[in-house]
Image 1 (cartoon, one colour):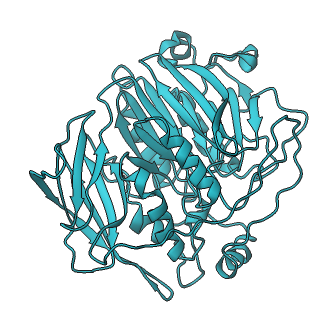
Image 2 (cartoon, one colour; image 1 turned 135 degrees about the horizontal axis):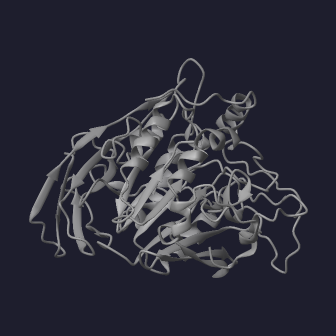
Length: 451
């Protein structure tokens, strides 16, 4: 595993604050934007209890694990439960069994349960499978993604485990989807390991039924100098992603293919300069993409490269300078990020200018975290920023075919979900000029309703 990125000098005092006062929400500044919608304050942290027997699975979640395979991950208090999954296409009838691996970890005085990871497959696409973990406990079911278009991704960043989180997940679950993407900041445990367990139990009803693909944020670091200098101990043990299947050497960055889409999950908090393993892996990964077979390329990371919110201003700049050229030359279609607790959609950009061949940048760090919303945006607004709003919510990217996708952002109102922003996207594979003239730019794109 690569060493983490250098921390700013304020990180360690913040870590101590989280360590001793983990559940204290911060108050946000007054809103900078005018809107008829009354912004909602942070809500209480939800601590989800464990009520099953020690041998029964808890914190069950699924992820994609290479072509036609999925990984089932769960935890048991009983260390003697085998790492096996029985499954089939009929409820209560398991005609296939797969065996996997297990791990555990310690963090100061905390000892995790037995963490199981089992790959099942090969699986048929668009098929519901019923499964049981470790030979004990309740039956779960999952649906595999479709083999081709259309496919729908749900994108939610900075999720946390508050009453707003529960509201977001309820809105997400009100409409079907195929793959859940989380661009960092999962549990907000911040060294308080029982909060990792609580988060796993909170999301289990959703993550056990659809694949959850995540990348790390700053709240996953959990670095403690000298004792835990490399960080990500809990994250790597609990949320194993298909990094090996994608040729990566680190669980902090990887890629996967699903239904004509290639999704790259980058690590904002591990080395990314031109000499780093992540940079070299990204070069190789992009070079392997056949846009005739995989017309859509999506990138996900935590700290945004473009941001007009005053929160976390410029924190993604060094990574942008190191990697933006790779994404631009590969004609990446869209880049999702989190970190900033608000929603913002940009036009297509390259090197701080509107460019019809650059990615659409979207910040969606508004899942429901305990720290509250980032209410202050720069004024006047940049022409590159098309829509921005500091509200909790979630996004949906429905890829209809090789050329068209629909993006919508759903704001959490008090009890319902409202589409507040939407746009049709065109895959850059359909823009011939982007492949013939790599340097083309056009400032007139900044206000387009279709990108």
